[in-house]
Amino acid sequence: MKHLKFLKKIPQKVYFLFLPLFLLFIFLTGFLMTYSFKVWNIGNKLLPRPFNVSPEAKLPIIKTKFIPVVSAQGAIIMDADSKVVLYSKNPDLRFSTASTAKIMTALSALDYFKTTDILTVRQATSDGSVINLFAGEQMSFENLLYAMLLPSANDAALAISQNYPGEEPAFVQKMNSKAKELKLYNTHYSDPAGLVDSGDYTTPFDLARLSSFAIKNNTFKQIVNTKEKVIYDTTGASIYPLQNLNKLLGIDGVNGIKTGYTEEAGQVLVTSKDEKGKTVIIVVMGSEDRFSDTAKLLDLVSNNLTYLSIHPKLR
Image (cartoon, rainbow, N blue to C red; front, side, top):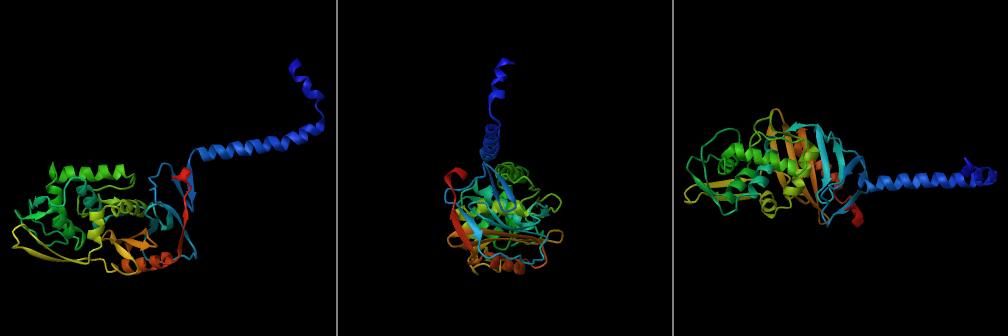
């Protein structure tokens, strides 16, 4: 105990001087340890690192805040580059995807097919929305993408999946593998068209995240930003005039993405909007009026965002 005797010789005033310095040391140590975990706390969303923040990402801030009243049971506004959530309502609640599953169908197919590839319709289907493709008909992959993403043709989605090696079962497996790759942890697919309500589910957060990646694919971006298109089969004998179901396309910077509806899912809409050269993703799920709800969320971000640079250490 001899080495502790020197403590008795230290004046009491030194203890009072040392205590604040010791507490400051503990505070700084705790702060640095928290920072070392590299988490990014934005609003009410804690985003674990790494989080795939693109190099051009900037931090969006809403200048004038207000809470839109929407009928949708789930909704979200997400900045596509930074993945920052600007608004949310039940963002992690699972809903049926309906036809927004075709966003993943398109993204998964674009990993494998070239736009010029010629695909053969294996079987005709009349389930839900179709353009009446017939068995044996041949069409370019690009034209099938237009059919699937504009009028939401289920027969086009089926044709794409059945031309994948292993056909539809293998393609659905590819869709779910892609979901894991993109860290969509609350998403699952049972078919390429989004018709199986019990097996096709996602959350507003996952759907916005998926869309933020999809919109960076130039082919996908061009197609979902198209209002009208006439496509043909390889013979030129079959002609299909297509209309985009997204009524908001071209309004207030809206340049995509996809509608969806089943009785169980209700009305679903994924929207991409150009805001000061940046892309904002808006999702409404379980909506009674998807276009009205989305218009209200558009009002929240239109000319109401400012972007701050993100420090390189947070990328």
